[in-house]
Length: 131
Image (cartoon, rainbow, N blue to C red):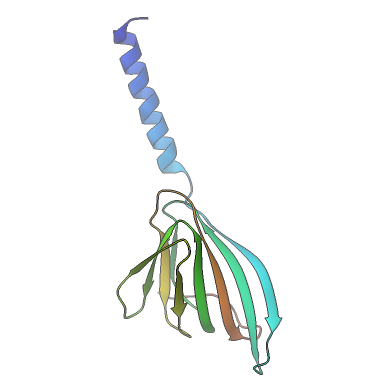
């Protein structure tokens, strides 16, 4: 094979690889782990694992109670209403007060995961989107 053939083929392959990477979905997956009543009347604890593909974004939302987010792997950026953005790496935590609108984005190179623990009103809708 000669160079005139190899270079164009390599360029076409690179373009298709780049386009395929851009077309991959940036999903967020939630796995419910625990839901139990606690000693406070009308309250329950809910624990959820949230997995973010690279670049995935959980838009503005709020919860009917407090959340503690613990980053299991990767790097996540959180934006809480009225505060500057904060970036957390694996092993770091964030407290999100009752009803505060917030978003989260995977800003790292690979997948990211968090363990979200909520103390919320019994049987309330856990996630409320905010415009």
